[in-house]
Image (cartoon, rainbow, N blue to C red; front, top):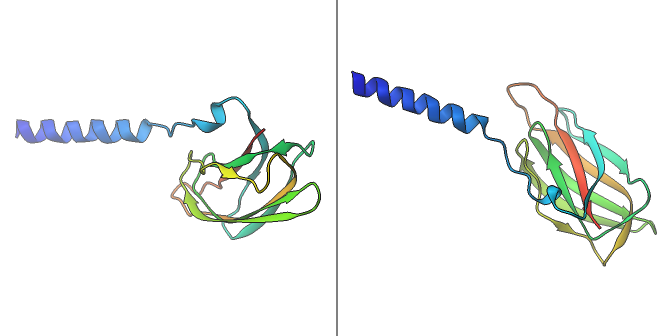
Amino acid sequence: MIKTMFLLAAAVISITSLKAQKVAVVTTDKPGWHKIGETTVDFKTDKDKLYVLGNDHFKSIILKAVDAPVHIENLEVVYGDGEPEEIPVRFDFKAGSESRNIDLKGYDRKIKEINLVYRTVPNWKGEKAHIEIWGLK
């Protein structure tokens, strides 16, 4: 009986500590990364157009799901000259996770806007996902 209680208490403590851990954000804490856009998504498939202020040059971008899971279907980067680049993502992001570095076509391109097709993954809290887009200069 005592052994069973000890095992049960150990299991509860380990599950509680696992839930309290946060996903480490490594890339966006490094020098050179700048937040270039953000949006909050709905529970249905949606499309957003994010204008990048300053029409700056970026080598690569990262997508980050901040507080709730989200499914990102596609990403379109429109450069300063109007040329679009379609980037298929098709990935379910967990809350607090981020994408790999997405290298942009060419080198040191000016980004005018970013178009996202996404949907919030249903979750037990009913939270809408908040997406951040980070660019590396």
